[in-house]
Length: 238
Image (cartoon, rainbow, N blue to C red):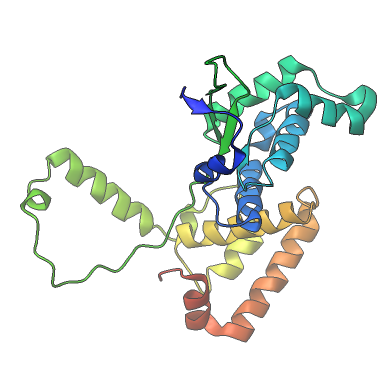
């Protein structure tokens, strides 16, 4: 997107998708949890440094590649990364939807540094309760046979029980959670929360301890909150 004028950093606030630095960091953790394995070690270093440069305006970075690479080299010395590695990281991040890149221009029309906009992680929001007193739209009654089949498949997937939980969720966790929440989708959402917490505390590779702690934590949640209060607290619809 050309035409963004450089020089006025306050104007870049409009490109931020986050209300706070903490919210920005939470979304970065989820992005990395989902896609970290798709980047090389050098690319991860570049991505994390780009994140640090996007802290002043949460999720927005307006810095020259040379400035970012210099900062990396000052910290890692001989283990710094090349410009080509940084550019490969940017390309991957764009393709994965992590960032959007905007071209900026100086007052004389020449190209300046790019503006990097971090995007929100596409989390699944709980369904909103709609009021029943609104008029029914005619278009809703004209669904094609294809649409009806898709909706039927979606409804079926939401009703699958614990036997359909993916292999990435440990069976001891499934066996415990199914006693309170039998839907496969809900069990997988709880395990995703565990993974986010493990990533935040940099212990995602300690699988045995993660499982033990997650089982203890879930038992404590049920003990202190009860099933109904826990659902309300986490905004999960039974």
